[in-house]
Image 1 (cartoon, rainbow, N blue to C red):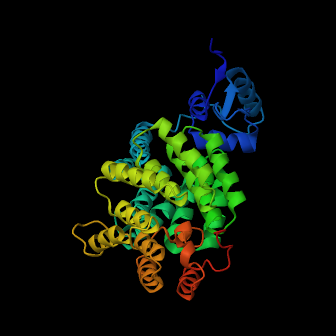
Image 2 (image 1 turned 30 degrees about the horizontal axis):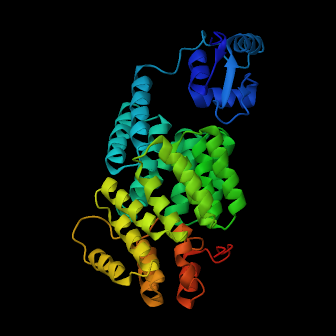
Image 3 (image 1 turned 30 degrees about the vertical axis):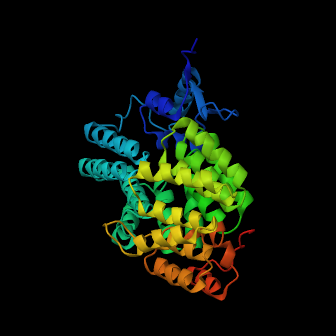
Length: 403
């Protein structure tokens, strides 16, 4: 039977105090709000007791540190409440990680901003949506990433202590600006603002992987999973983190865990296929790519990855046939320059690989952060052409992949 005195999440604690989640999280750090933490990853990350919170409120009120809930009206007036509802709808669609979901998310974030232009979180949500549209190569980075940067910066202006806002800006700095040091500072600031914001750790793992700091990256992504063990995309990215460390068995385990939660999740099938091809199981890899293509509706990135699988399986003709299709665009989709370059690496064609990587650099392709760790480039990693691109991207000072 549930304990009536107990509150089992930040949301319940914030609701009881009639404040926003980030406010009560700051109160815990600065004013001693009594919040407890679980140590079993399958349980919620925090809990509290009404009786302890009531005692804390009385104590704080006597010391005049904070107003009581009764003394000051709840910030969630109609305008903020409506804006917050729109923001939460946006995050719901954003978490679907599909083009349709991201475009719906943008609609709701913009609606939230119109309702309350001083509310920081919708600006962060808008930045994250534009970043994913670019990362998934649905739109050109140069088309939307400057707007993503402005949205993230505006979120920080409105709430300098927003973990979401700092993580949003960090992702722009990592993927679009390739400013590794500034991205590191922003990720760490996000974690400092809210140690329970899972995406702060999740995205920080990307930067750590790019640097070849694979143990640290694994620690970060597992911390994200401890906070939210049923986040499908975080499970997938735990697999990607292992993949970039060339631990393909561990990667496959994470992808299978993600598919147990959602057997139709595109990104789990796609990255599973890449891990299987690295293991030499080309038949299963191609089956996974076929499933991914069906779920994604003929996505060009998936087609380029499939070409790579054919190439390392020794079927150069099939690989070149797909490359010919990609190099003669018949749709409005972005051309997946980075993945095409990886296929030419598998075919042993260093000049064509370099040509497509140079194009990826000009286009600000968002996958370039993985360049020194991506196992697909192992065949030509030591070529002069590859080393020049690594220098251009700014990754030459970091540890190379193990392969």
